[in-house]
Structure formats: structure tokens, C-alpha cells
Image (cartoon, rainbow, N blue to C red; front, side):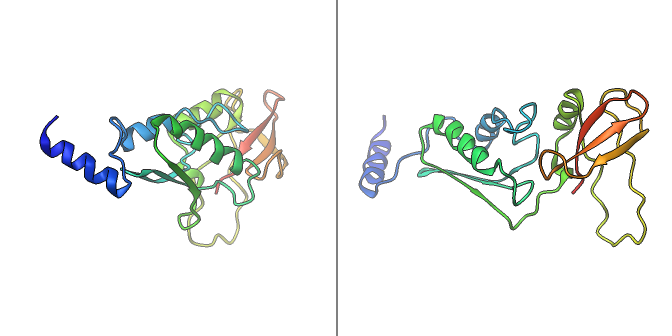
Length: 182
């Protein structure tokens, strides 16, 4: 170790700061967060859902801002706890908070996340609605994740959570859940 490195280490120790651990960068944080599954739908991660906002990596710790899918989502505390637990593997102090400045939209769900939802029997949401008001909207058909038919009907706009609705496919006669488009 060089004399300069030793002196830098001593200065950091006196200042109460620690150098960043090797391999702790935004890419490694994102890779770790890909392991954190949504507690209600474990086939998708917080990365798949597009919930990860800002990531801060510094000598004094790791900070992550998450974008809640719904403000009243009952799983937010569980998600925060799981993200914190996963990031503690980097042996750094971790701060996870929810950021409401940037709204989450269903367009943030990744293609891999949409496919995982579809493969598990959930209909992924369609594209977000345009910003301009729509005077008349009959609703877009929701494709059945089981058979692919668009001959589906809304059974209940309020599924097991606020972010999901229950549909019925008239082609294969199967009920299924769909993420709401936001």
C-alpha cells in the first residue's frame, strides 16, 4: 500500500468516513435489487416493476429512493425492509426511502417484468393514458394471459389490491388478474 493510500485512510478514519467497499457501484446495487421480489407478486422484482428511482453510493453508505406503485400500497413497508436487508450485504449503512416527487406509472414495468406477469397468469397493464383528457373512453381490451384472447370482461375493478383488477376471459372461461394502467 502506498504512503498516500495510508494517509488517505488515516484522514478518513479521523473524519469518521469509510472508503467505498470494492464492487459497490450503481450497477451492483441494481443487480442486488433484481433479487428483491414484490411481496404480493413474487415473479417480479422491484427492478421489473420500475420502482427504483435514484441510487446514491458514497463512502458513507448507500441510499435508494423507491417509487411506490400506489401511495396506499400495503406492501410498502415490506418492500422497504427487503431492499434494506438485501443491500446490507454490501456492508455499508443503507437508507431506503419512498420518493413521491416522481410518479410511478405502469409504463415503468420492464419488458421482462411484463413477460413474467403474463407467464404467471397476470395481464400486464397496457400503455399509460395520454396526458390530454379523453372525453369518451370505452376502455381497451385486456388480453387474457392464458390464451391471448382479447374477448375479456371486467369482473371487478377492485381486485385483491388497489393496483389490480379481476377479469374474465370469454374464450377460455378463465378468470385472471390484471395490473391497472396508471
